[in-house]
Image (cartoon, rainbow, N blue to C red):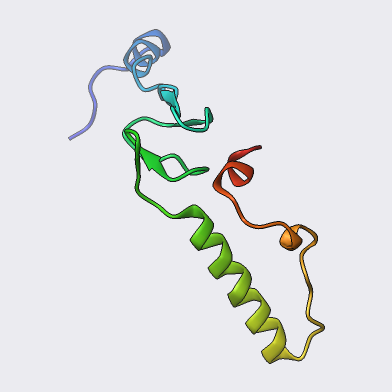
Amino acid sequence: MTVRMRHTRSHTANRRSHHALKGVRTSTCSKCGSQHIRHQTCATCGTYRGRQIIDVVGIQSKKLARKAKRNKDMGLEEETPKNEEKALDANTLSKK
């Protein structure tokens, strides 16, 4: 079947006026103060509703170890990060 009547621009625009995306609502982390999406863990410190859920320091150390192993296997020079001298700490990782 064909459309019998034309939809005017204003009618189409009125219909599409509700199609806009809404902005993301964020909350402030109670531990580190950074912004995160509501009902999700904080990406910088790994806490959700005051409880530690993700060990961010452990994940960072595993990434550094994997990178060092991959570089060693490829025969590249061992790159030591400049901030590796300091001990990894959740407070220093959460700062932006």
